[in-house]
Length: 123
Image 1 (tube, rainbow, N blue to C red):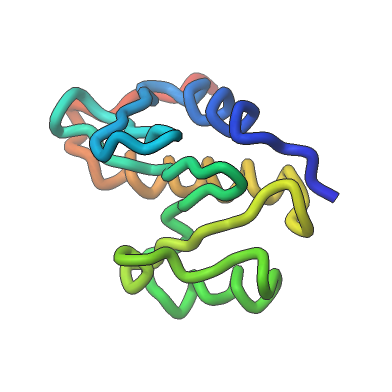
Image 2 (cartoon, helix red, strand yellow):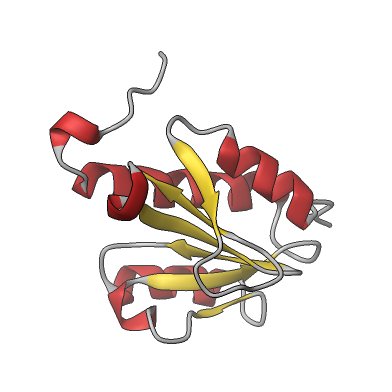
């Protein structure tokens, strides 16, 4: 059973180097970006009981999450074809796997930023 809350996930996301909250659509919960200002890229979409993450670089690989956790992971609306999934927390997905998926999403997005603006992760 997962015990994560949206506050826990927000805190985890914001602990990653260069991460910052943004609310471009005036939703209850922010998106979390990495990278400077308008060039910042989203790596997590926070929701009341879910988080949207870049699960893989392809839809086929991202679908592995859906097969492992049916009903807990779904293709993310609008971005799903690009490998984005929505993961429910507080349910059947272990906390550690959710946090790992967020960190992998962060790494995928950071990897696509120009080298000069990529945040440095401490060893």
